[in-house]
Length: 94
Image (cartoon, rainbow, N blue to C red; front, side):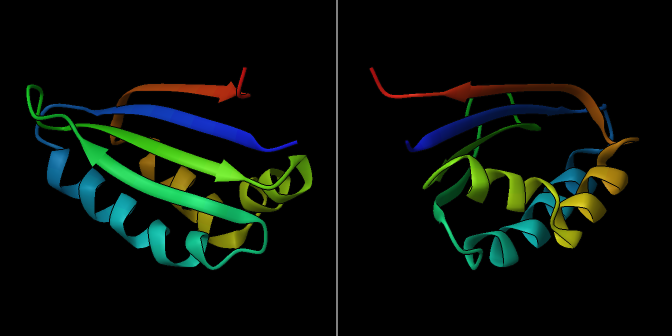
């Protein structure tokens, strides 16, 4: 079963550019992962510094691989001090 992730990420004030850089760096290796079907970053037009990832994976195994990948773990560590909000939703198509 395909799994969709949406992640709403809001930077701490003054950390927007640093968060954008960290997000940009995690995209290329994530898109290369086996089982990653879509990995797209958006930024809010109305609230700069608020980002939304739309991700789609073939199955739970592919998502687990992503979550445990070295590049994603490095991003998470770097983002700890950059994020004011991190809301992640695991979704399935209905």
